[in-house]
Length: 269
Image (cartoon, rainbow, N blue to C red; front, side, top):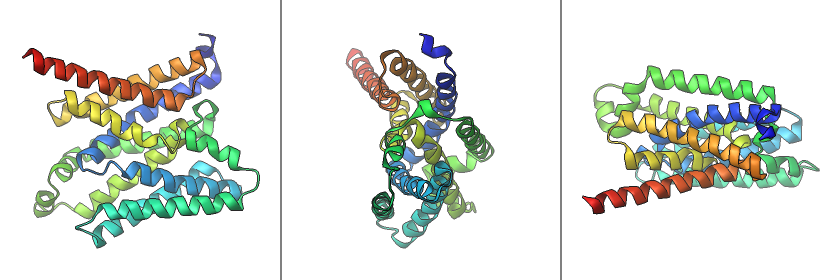
C-alpha cells in the first residue's frame, strides 16, 4: 500500500473524488431527460480539441473544453431544428467530432501516443494545473445546481410545464449542456473519452434502482460515484490495473448487485 502515500496517487485521488461528485451529478439530469448519449458525443468532440491542442502547442484539456462547450451549443441548435428527432443532434455532432479528431490525428506527427492517455484515461499523470481546473469546474457545477435546483427539477421532469410557467427553457437547456461539457472535458484525462459516458450514466442507473425521490437520487448517485472512484483507484493501484477501466467495471458490478438485490426483494415479498 505504499502507493497510497505517493504524491501522484494523492493527486489522482483528489481529482477522482472531484469528478466522482460532478460527473454522476450531471448524469442524473441527463438520464432523467433521456440524453444519456450526450456524454459520448461531447467526449468525442473533446478529443478533437485535445488533438488540436497537441498540434498547436496549447494546453490540450483547455482546447478540448472549448470544443465541448461549442458542441453543446451546436447540439441545442440542432435539437431545435429537429424537434421530433432530437437524437439526430447527438448523432450528427458525434460524427463530426470523430471525423475531425481522425483528421487531426493524421496531421499530427509524434503526438498520437499522448492522445491515447485521453482516450483511455491517465489519472496518475494529473498535474497541479489539472487539479486546479477540475476544482474550478466542480465549484461551478455545484454552485449552478445548488442555486437552480428547483428550476432544473422542473425542466428535467416536465419541460412543457416549465415553459408555460415562464421559465427560460432554452437557457436551462444550454446551461445543462455547457455544464456537462465542462465535466466531460476535465474527466477524459481521468477515465478517458471512451469511458467517460459510463461515469455519467451508470451511477444514475444505480440510483434509479434504490432511490424513491429526486433528492434521494441526487444523494445516492454521488455516493455510488465516490465509492466506485475510491475503490477503483485503490484496486488499480495495488494490482497495477488501468484506473479508468477498473472504476467503470466496479460501477457495473455495483449495478448488477443492486439489480440482484432488488429482484431478491421482490421475490421475498
